[in-house]
Image 1 (cartoon, rainbow, N blue to C red):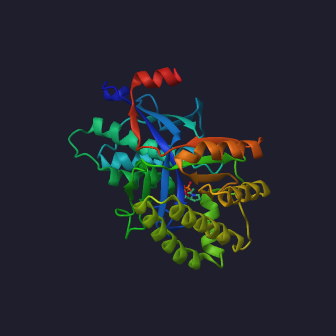
Image 2: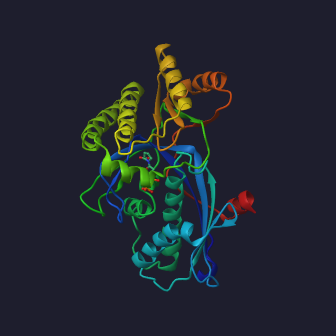
Image 3: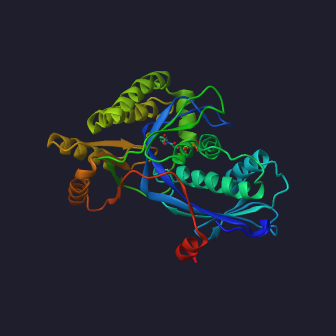
Length: 347
Ligand code: 2P0
């Protein structure tokens, strides 16, 4: 971060994506992004978004540039909304418009949750930017910060912390927050099997709304998900990958079942996803602790011991040479990047 006149002040950050072990799938309040159930995730190190925010008095409105390309007003709207919440919170409605430059190191919109790292990066950078503009206002806690990330995208709430993180149901907006559970600095890892990096046909936002409104299984899902959550929490406490993995897989299957039971029904699973799932089961039959989860896309994420990650990767690569694999270990909370780091990366 560089301290210059407010007009050209810049802040750059890196925030990591997270993968839900217990899924968020539905809002009880669409405007405030309050979830219908508590979710739990693992933040990943190797999939992240870098973002720089700059006050620019020459701009008439906030701008979003993705990998150097200026986005249209519709794509910028949610970013502008989150920035407006910071202007309000920091009591500076007249602050200059902000230029947002974002670089995703996550295949966008492929069920790999680039919105989680994107809005976490935005919130983390905006706090630093507005703090510099209004140093007289007391520092915003990470817990409160997670409610600002939430307003951009539900899953972004959880990327405000590293390791295993819960996003609590809460009683309202101020306590539907991220809670860090465990930094996951032990024998845990993921291999992501990116079956498709194409834009998905049904967005998560629409998919969860349609499912909550029409699925015959939706009320059962909420009840059952709470039980799965308790099992994952117990598994994290015991550092037992088998307890965590079994409950994670069960939660994933119930989450996808809600969509099979929607009206009309739909699914994000493909035949290739099923082949990978069967392969994970076969690995487990051989004694490797490997467990799958899938989100709003065809990709399969495999939870395993860090000490087994190379084996899981190699076996998958041999069986599915056409699938791109990403190795990940637990990631940390967002961090600030220096101007020098930014210019070395993005010129
Ligand atoms: C999750 N997903 O818990 C769930 C599981 C996808 C499946 O959070 O509408 O992009 O912006 O809050 O966060 C993806 O949905 O949706 C997601 P919005 P988001 O990770």
